[in-house]
Image (cartoon, rainbow, N blue to C red; front, side, top):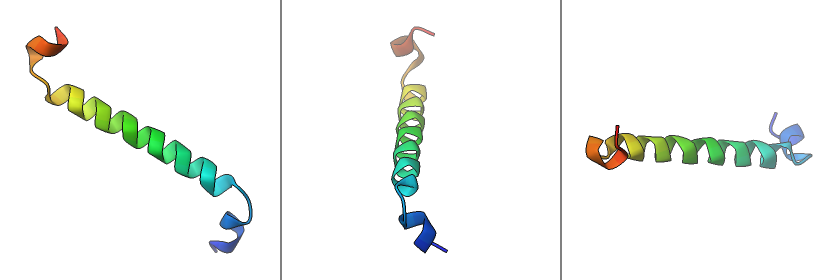
Length: 41
């Protein structure tokens, strides 16, 4: 099943998207963990 996934660069695009999503989630989580006076909210 993974043979056709590696046959083209679609897996690389999916990996890049997954990394960007993970980065946004981690950054958002880090921002939420900050004290309220740090974000001004």
